[in-house]
Image (cartoon, rainbow, N blue to C red; front, side):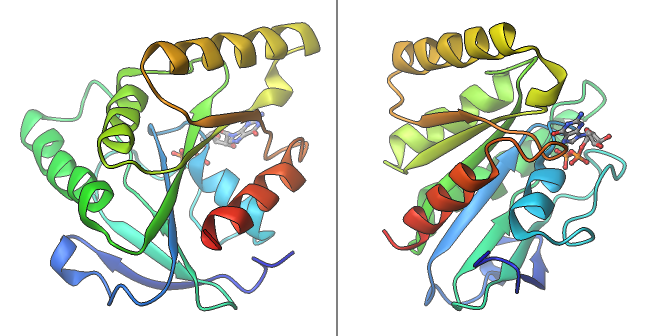
Amino acid sequence: NPFSQAQFLLSCAQLTQLPADDAPEVAFAGRSNAGKSSALNAICGRHGLARVSKTPGRTQLINLFSLASSARLADLPGYGYAAVPEPMRKSWGRLVGGYVEQRTNLRGLFLIMDCRHPLTDYDKQMLAWAVTARRNCHILLTKADKLGYGASKTTLLNTRKGLKDMGSSASVQLFSSSSHQGLDEARAKLTELLAS
Ligand code: GDP
């Protein structure tokens, strides 16, 4: 596993605090509670790397992790709870939208969606930014262990159709941090994006 050396590097509350754009980055995004921290931990094979189930929506930080290859993973703040107040949504948009649009070393996005609630408004906003900024995007439909075989296939097909309808060329797969379904595929995709 090429990500097993992942280490927390730093947190940024503003784009100006990001380290120099001298190494490839792939960013992880997802609505709060979608399973983003669990996916990061599973992909890196490191349990406590990204914290799981913190109080959602309070701190809005980009957390950076360094890999053995000197590449980095960026954990973008999620939102999605009705309780998040409007000014916070605005600052979230500035930080996350700005990062997706401007970060020159960003090689692609991993967008994490709960397979039972794919393509939320949050996800559509992220995908719209990715389309505008011409970012490669790979979607993990996670918690796939919660759905049966038929239902998960249906979700996969419906999500592909929804993406096509919105002009996104994002790739999409089923994933589970619990059962490790789709883990090899996700690692291969991440390796490919970091090398792109
Ligand atoms: P985040 O807010 O997107 O970082 O989500 P977390 O990773 O903290 O996960 C939110 C909740 O979903 C936690 O209770 C996790 O244990 C649970 N969860 C995350 N991934 C999976 C998965 O693949 N399968 C199942 N069954 N539960 C998961």
